[in-house]
Length: 241
Ligand SMILES: Nc1ncnc2c1ncn2[C@@H]1O[C@H](COP(=O)(O)OP(=O)(O)O)[C@@H](O)[C@H]1O
Ligand SMILES: [Mg+2]
Image (cartoon, rainbow, N blue to C red; front, side):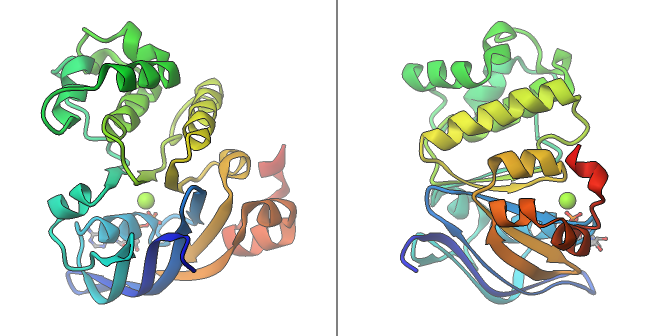
């Protein structure tokens, strides 16, 4: 498949003496939004961290853009065109929104056109531009974290649970921003617990359980198959209201 931007083959990860990932195989097609779903503790965050080289694969390979990045140091992986938004977001509360953004830019300068595009995606950032990031709400911080990841053009965005703990109205804003981002042709691997968001945004889906991939397919297919959702994710009918 030549359209796979990222490919994991038989990836195993150990954290200390714990064997967490057991042969993870999946691809992220170029220009698509791939959802990575699974119950708590399934290994989603470990997978993202392993892709970024923050945990090391003890076995298996990770190819990005046709290049083996399995053993590259994290800064080289980032330089190859991957951006990672961890659950903890990595925002500097004491710095202004502007300073947070500038720190994420390669040479300390943000392309003005790109900044206007980012403001269009996340208007709150323009509004709070000169204020300390610490005053932002949880949703606005999440938006700042994503904005930092796209301050430079990136080939692939890895984003870990961006809607976690957010109010429904904010989740809707976030979904809109992701739709806009998708429409620019961005390739995204998104970990999400909110099934509504997953359903609205995902092109394809990968489901993990216990450090293994237990399902791959089209998001639309999983969205319609409630029995499969129940089996893979333990979702009840309530999650469809
Ligand atoms: N730093 C760590 N040390 C030991 N075990 C860990 C560590 N981080 C995660 N794990 C374990 O790895 C498994 C997968 O965790 P994680 O990747 O965070 O799951 P998910 O993101 O799908 O909720 C869990 O059993 C978790 O307890
Ligand atoms: Mg996680």
